[in-house]
Image (cartoon, rainbow, N blue to C red; front, side, top):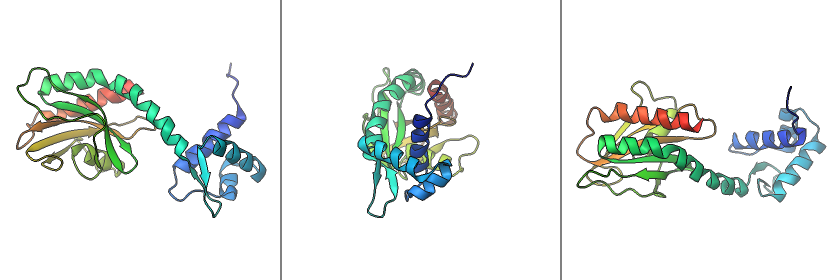
Length: 213
């Protein structure tokens, strides 16, 4: 038996998804055509979503995703962090380097979970909440490569000295996780990343992705 669903809620969620997929917003007419409903229905949906700050309309009448969506998104981070920690702990202990889960936040890469190894004499300090441009550092570059379809076997990005002098990084993108762009990686004080690290990071990213599905 098919569970009962709310047609209005379904349409509202579809509006949010359509707006999230465009950088320039959509007009009422465009939304009406995409949803296959009349303009009156779209006006009501937008008015309701605006009341909750999930949608905003500019002076030209184009609807865009509102800041309320960002507030909801921030509440997801603790859930994602909890799911990722087992794989990150195993990665940090295995490699002897600081492991991290990084997610896209606007135009930046945001570290939402960090695990440091327990047995090393020294390691790179990398804190939860650390931000950096997506085009700098292994974590961001892995995400961008996946977004552009440029990640191929073995599927990881390597960098040296881009975020911290003397530090090298390796990261692999999360693949197959709906609604989340991110990567799993390690950062270490070394001139280069040992050969075995890249494939190990790919394995950890796969584990995290499976935990989030």
